[in-house]
Length: 255
Image (cartoon, rainbow, N blue to C red; front, top):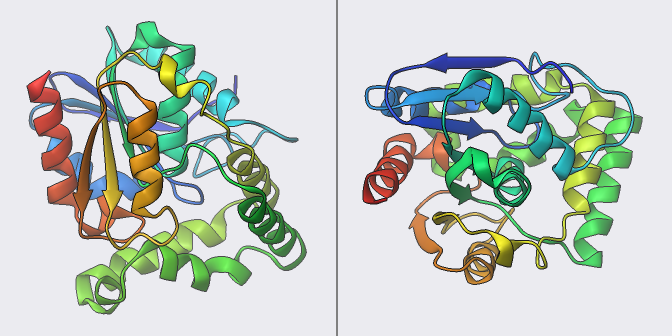
């Protein structure tokens, strides 16, 4: 298992925060600050991201789920509430199936359960771009997908955008390409019906990267799943941290 960088803080029910592709655990700074008064919050960097170990060669979302399962087993007592956004939401869908004994509930935000051939072609093109031109070649497009125009223009928002742009551009291109390939190959239509834990699906009404229809599809594939929406683009937990944390905390309290 790769060595994962993590931060654990707070007291109370254990909540694990799993970040988006090309981000790191700092993506959760504002959300974690909202949750730590009542929860033990464990957030971490995926393999090849942030300060976690870069593992050469290909990987899968299943591998990433196993990575964090080992971290949870080592760091937290009892089952956790697992919150994942985008790629983290894909990890959430897999860890609930592969390691159900570790999971009390999942929150799947701004994510997908599968991609068609057209989308997979887009992922291949992005992989080629970063391997040939470097991470800076995709950062402008990523910021436009991740955040609404108003957030990018807002003085406080623009600081968060600049910080996360720096994280993206500092990501190892080969590790990012491997993660893109893992994301492109997801196919959870057969496994999601096996998810037995309580599930909240969050969609962004302004999310063009994983549109609301994808959230609705995930919700339909998991028995008893609830759907909530935020008026935000793809990184809804960054754009609307208080509202995101309120949805998560309310969901956990309702269980």
